[in-house]
Every structure is written in structure tokens, then in C-alpha cells.
Length: 429
Image (cartoon, rainbow, N blue to C red):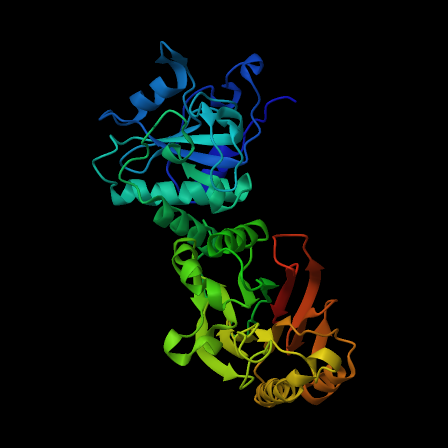
């Protein structure tokens, strides 16, 4: 397969407001086809390891290289003043063999990554102008390749030979800053007055719901949650049976650009049965605890409960209240009949919340593990009493009011006994 050519580099970087210098011949510059392919799925960040700075050094990277490593040595170079030099459109010698990192599998790094050489010795720190240009460049590349920030790696994260670049750079913070830039936009809005009667634009959130299942390895669960958020570019996710994984999830989610909405252990295990994960940068209000059941799912005298007693957390995201539901719509019969009274009490709480929010014109979404299909008579009564729309299939479905829920899809993903559901929520005209 012929090498790709990133002929859009200079134009897209300029559109983002960056100062761009094109090293002549960059559009046709690449390593020969015989040396390998170039089909990038991510971005690899380096420091040059030298005090040299500016266009002369960028030209050396583009045209000269080293005796043991022919040019071009990267695709872009960013100097200390924040100037971005465009060096090559095709394959470059910058990565070598790459091990698996983030969302990118191991292999030929020169084929897998766009290479960015930042003019820095690795120990000096990063001047604001240079760092800002790096973040903006990362956002542009992320949108154009396209790739998520999990595919933007430091060379030290992929190297099999012990590279340490880019030194003195907090890569988790850097990725979070790139992600924020991608969401806010890489180009400032055009100046000018807002029309006095302009209608609010439609707000679309990419969402998911997943029952994580109790009793699993917390590290494995955390890895799967982060992978799902990345793979499906999720803004808001509700999770059930999360009590055993909160500690393992909290810090990785924060480093990854998400906030975990749950309650502290002082409220008891029941307060952490469900949680809501929200991407940073989205507007949040009013985190609330809702106790759904007074007892757990008992397994018999003297034996531990199968689940924590039911409770849920809700939070308003961009004016839409999300409630993580782990609740059966109506009593069970047969072997599970003992759950009946608690289920009815909890279901009554959820119904009351839905009616209350609807009466106050608060749009809401209740995704989760309802334990019965949406066609269940009690589920239909819930829809009737609250004015809700029920979407999705199986026992994991989405109830909503005042918003449009669409694209509900069961994803064959992860190792829980439930597959996650992804969907979109839109609010506005």
C-alpha cells in the first residue's frame, strides 16, 4: 500500500492560529517506499536533545539527518518561540520499533506515528509559547488523522531501547490539555456580536451505560473502562455494580480527562453502587444521592450479599440530569421473590424522581441495568407515569424525558457479563 502524504499539514496548522514555516520540498519529502509504509494512527512526541533552535535546525532535521539515520527525522518541529516547521509529508525516521502503548499496537513506529520534534534539551522545561503550540498542534493532528489522545504518546512510552524523550513533560497532563483543546476548538471563534434572538444550538452528548459486574479484578476493570471511553469517544457514562472499583478508577479517570461522580465511603457501600463518569470541560451541577433500597440481594442466612444495597447518583451535565439506574421495574417471583418489596420501593423512588423532574421541566436521562426488558408491564407503567421514552433492548436500556436518545447500540466489548450500550443524547433545536 502506498505511503500516505499529509499534504494538509501546513494549511490546517495555520487555520488553528499557529505561526507556520514550510521547509521547501516538504510535500514530496519522505523515506523511500522500499523502507516501509506510512499510515499513521497516532502522534509521537520527542525532544531534540540539543540547544539548537529555529529554522536552521529544522532544515537539518528535514534535509541532512545523521550519518546513521537519514533525513527526514520528523514531520514537524516546534521551536522555543512556538513556531511550527513543516518538514515532511511522508514517512520519516523518528520512531524505530515501537512497543504497544496507549491505544496503538506495537510495530513499525515510523509507519504508525506522525513525529513531532520539539526543540528542547529535555531538561530545561517548556516555555509557554512552545507548550501552547505543542498542545494546539496535537489537537490539529488528533482531529485530522484522526485519533484520540490515547494515541498521542511520548517516545519514552513506545521505545524498546530506553529513550527518555520528551523529558520534563508530564504526558498525562499534556494529553488532557490536547483533549481539552480538541473539544473547545483549535481555532478562536470569529469576532462579532451574537444575534439578539439567536436560538441555542443542539447539544449532542456521546453516552454509554455499563454494568461492570462484581467480583472482578479492579485493575482489569479500570483498563476496560478507559478503553471504552476512548474507543467510543464517550462524554458521559453511567456505571452499575461499581462499588468495588471506585478506588482503582478515580485517579486514572482524572488523568484521562474525566470526573467520577459518586459518594464517599462514609455514606456506606450502598452509596457507591452506581456512578456517573463525565468528561472534564462539560458543565456539571447538583450531584445527588438517591437511596433506592434498604437491603441488598441476600444470598441466604450467614452469607454475604450478592450486591451492595441499591442506591444511585445523579448529576446534571450540560443541563441534562443523568441518573445511573440499577433497579428492577417491579417485584421478582420464584427464587428471587425476596427482592420484591425492596425493588418496588426503589422503583417507586425512581418513578417519583422522573415525575418531579419532568414537572419542573428538567430534562433527564436514566440509563442502566433495569433487570427487565422495557416491554415489562411495570416498565410501561413507569413510562406512562413519567412521560418517559424507553430506548434500547435487553435489560440494559435508557429512559429519558425532554431530550432525544438515539443510536442505542450494544457493543461487544469487555469481560463483564453485560455488554455496554452506547447512545447519543441531544438537547436543543
